[in-house]
Structures are given as C-alpha cells and as structure tokens.
Amino acid sequence: MRAVVESEEMRQVIEKGNFLAITARTARAARAAAVDWTRESLSACEGVDAILVGIGGLYLGLALAEKLRLPLIQAHVVPFTPTRAFSGALLPLSLPGLGARANWLTHHLTRQAMWQGFRAADARVRQQVLGLPPAPFWGPFNDERMRRAPVLYGISPSVIPKPGDWDERTHVTGYWFLEPGAQWGPPASILSFLEAGPPPVYIGFGSMGSRHPEETAALVVRALELTGQRAILGSGWGGLRPGALPASIMVVDAIPHAWLFPQTAAVVHHGGAGTTAAGLRAGVPSLVIPFFGDQAFWGRCVAALGAGPPPIPRRRLSAEGLAAALEQVRSDDALRTRASALGKAIREEDGVGRAVAIVEQWADR
Image (tube, rainbow, N blue to C red):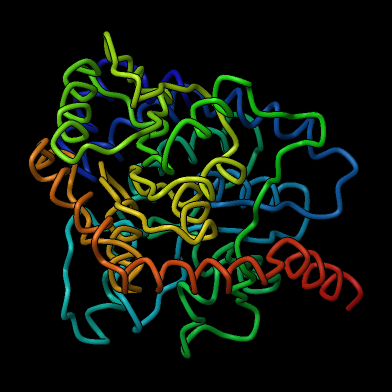
C-alpha cells in the first residue's frame, strides 16, 4: 500500500483530491495484486473461525468467507453502513444540508463507486483462485454473510453517536487505540525540546505523499514564523524535510501519537481516521488539512464538535491561512475547553474491550 501511495502517479492524483481518479488508480493496483493477495489470504485462513474485514479488504474477505464457509465480521473505522443521519464519509465533496433520503443515497453511491472500481479484480480472483461464480453486478451487499455477523465501528460515540436507523447488529464501540509498547521510550532530544519552552504545535500529514515536500515544509515554517509558535513537524511518508530550522521547530519521524499529542498545544494533520482519533483523545484542539477520501468528513466532524477550526483543504492551504487558523486555536478559550472535555470522554471509553465483548457474545450464540 505504501508503494502505491508513494508512486508518482498516485501523488499527482492525491494532490488533486479527485475521489474517482484515486479509486480508479487504486483499482488498477488491486487488479495487479489481487491474485497474490487471495492466495496468501487462503493460507492465512487455515484453521480460523471467522474473517474480520475493514473497507479495504471487504470484497476479498467476502469471497474468502464464501469459499471457506466462514462467517464475516465487518470492522470499520469510517462509516460505511447507509444512514439517513449524515451523508457518505467518502464523498469527494462537502454536501451540507442534504435531506435524510439524499443522505442515504450518498452512501449507496459511494459503495457503488468503490465496488465498480474493484469488480474486475474480484471477478479475477473468484475465477482464477477460488473457483466461485462472479458476484452480482451491483455488488455483494445483500449477501447473507453480511447480514449475519456483527458490524463493528471503531469510532467514539462521543464523535458519531449510533444513528437510529442502524440495526442491533451494528455497534459504535469506541476507538481502537494501539498503545505504545512498554519497551518504548521517547528520545532524549524530544524531551529536551518539550522542556525548553511552552507546549508546541504538532504538524504532520502522515501517509499523504507530496511531490513537493520542500514547498510544503516552507509553507508550514512560514506560518509558524507569522504566529511565533513552537512546533514539532512529523515527517511521515511525505518526506517533510525542511532545510535549516530555527530552534523553535523540531522534525521527528515516527513517534506514538498517544504519547506526543497530549503534550502539544494543538495538532495539525491530514484527517486520517486514526490520527483524528488520537488528536481528539489527547484533548487538544485539532486542525484538519484534508487531502482526499474520508479526511474532509473527519475535518467537518472536528469543527462541528467545536474541537477545532473549519478544515482547510490541502490544495487551498497557504501560509497565511494556516497562520490564521493557528491563531484561532491559540486565542479561542471555548474551543480549547470543548476539545478538553471531548478528550476526557473518549479516554473513559474502552473501544477494544467493547468490540471483544460483542464478538464473544456473538460467538457464544
């Protein structure tokens, strides 16, 4: 997946933020790799009692479950079950103010866009590896296996309460956090930086590659100069490597968000589901710079919850715009209070424990 994201073609597509173009590019990569994925997955499924899948592995998981006569448990970190409560999370555009029926329709349109992009890969593995008939043209969404087992959402109910039109099999459990291992400790250089002044802002775009990382870094550094704030820059996959930096800015590679974010004044990130969850749990304001996919959805959620300013799409980001948002985060006491309260509520949840309990109860039945 990292090789796909970091390819020159995908970087160009991601920068434009076109959902359909990104889906098409990902579908081509899936067609090339699907046979190998399926063979490896068949081997991995030996002796298992069930198959658990997220959005990315849904169609392959369903084909394997059909072949091996196993139950299929859906486990998502992005809303994927149609609802009238809000529009589809993977839509390329913000469509506020939609009616309930239109909201419901957007989820089905999103599902179809994804399914039609992967349908050729699905048909190939069913025929060449699994010896199964092709799935229905409009997708396998009515397959009985998708209606038997629980559907788990690793999302905080404090962020997205369970919609009233989701059935009793569908659960919003709370976030699924992976804590740092007991053997991990922060580098001395980071501890020294944190102790040298007030809490810094964290800025990082995770796995979102950029064809021009130097330009992105220069933009970020300029915004920090305008606000006079200290910052930790997460290089991530994007290679965010500015040149000579003032003592008020530090660049880090992989640092557990669970440890770092609570020590910051605010977090600025791309709006991936995991990074958004970590930022909200930390109880500090979040500013989302979405690139594509569900990231804009999470940015809107953060703003609607009052835990951060409105999101700024990456293609519209400027040093002045970033500086203005950072100033808002610094000066808005109400925003910081709401972020702190939301973080406390999330820290009191046990999403992993709740998910385990649901699966065990289902297995007992």
